[in-house]
Length: 91
Image (cartoon, rainbow, N blue to C red; front, side):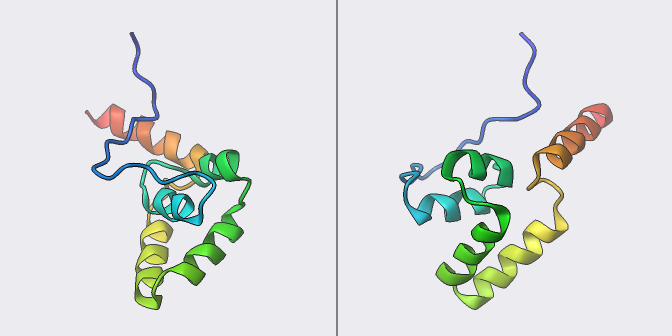
């Protein structure tokens, strides 16, 4: 059976309720959950996710998160799949 390009994320802590802002924060920090996935689950666009993160996180944590997601191209599904294909070719 062929594996998917989208890997499963293994987590220590249980996933929060999807109706809560805590799920959005949890998903935004997760490397393998894209903005498109967040939109499908909650209906929140990327700009709304950023506003929630800015409101709920400490300023230093928000800056750290923004730096992290800005440097990585994996928060958008199209770029995430492209990056996975490149990694598979290297292996």
